[in-house]
Image (cartoon, rainbow, N blue to C red; front, side, top):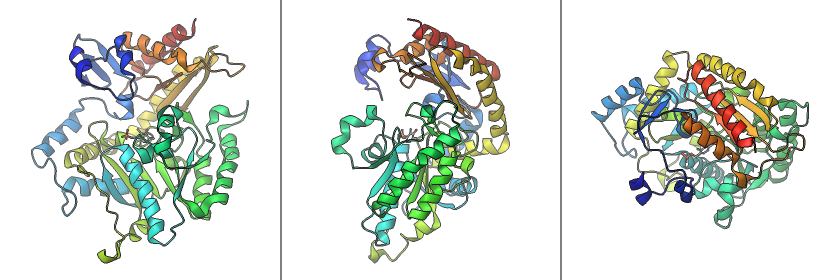
Length: 443
Ligand SMILES: *Cc1c(COP(=O)(O)O)cnc(C)c1O
């Protein structure tokens, strides 16, 4: 701990917080468990920032990686290729919505977003539509931290400081169903909110390259959720207005919302799909931007015409990372993961139904394996706890003592566990969350 604090600068952290709550040194992991050097064990209820799918130290993934390390650790992907990246691309094209036929790799989610933005713009450029330079984004959205990705995101906490550095976007109100009227369904509210998107497209489609969304759950935006109908309406509007649709499934992909990809819930194919986080089951950095054949074709020409997409990252398509992704897809194929998740998500729901009656819980919402509990100061007046009070952090501290990692988003506590969690462990983390919320809201 001391050595860490002398030399590290941790991500997304006010380092001064560590004066009172030092970082937890983790020695090893196994399944849903992480273990520190004093032998304390923690259930990783947030999948180590939404990346882990099949537990830590997974024997099947470990074996695949050992074999790959002894064969080929890395090779430049320009001018060369290798078995894991070819096989992974074939498999991804197979399992993603029909029409996504090309894979472009990077090594983190933000870069996958940058690639989608650049490709979309460049596609229109190659077609001679040089007036298309802008992007439509939803309020409360999050697409990463690099400047392009940050620009198309919309969470003030991460974005505001850097505003002078960022490209201008067209911001459309999110279909975030937290704000639906009493008695209004998710579907009704989501469709109602689409009128703003329709209007923005109608007004600006000529300057717009693409609309970018997080399908169904705005994860970093406090796990706010909406109905698949919005994606259906958006797909058809993007077609009508001649604008691309970028689906950022970096957080929701690989089964989190119930289906393998959230877009399946709406039966749509986006023009670009960005994947990372769960792609390697939480093992290694890798991301991919999938796109369609028509888009790929717009770049395919004689070199002298200068239409190629000249973008690269050093570790693009790393073989070891690709092996982790393949091993993860093997697990999806060999085991009834989605069916089993369906069962687990029902248990998550059952264990938290009574939370909705709590005087300081505004809502319990869920899409599949993502369940969020929003704390509120005054339920009747819908008045939030001031962010300065950091109620979520109090739940976090309580949960750590009880051996559960429940890193909050502001006043929102959520479960996004690895798929190897058991019903009994779900009951336990629910009880810990309840007690933590009682403590945090009791004064
Ligand atoms: C995490 C995340 C990103 C950024 O991915 P990084 O690998 O952290 O750069 C982008 N979009 C969504 C929806 C995310 O959850």
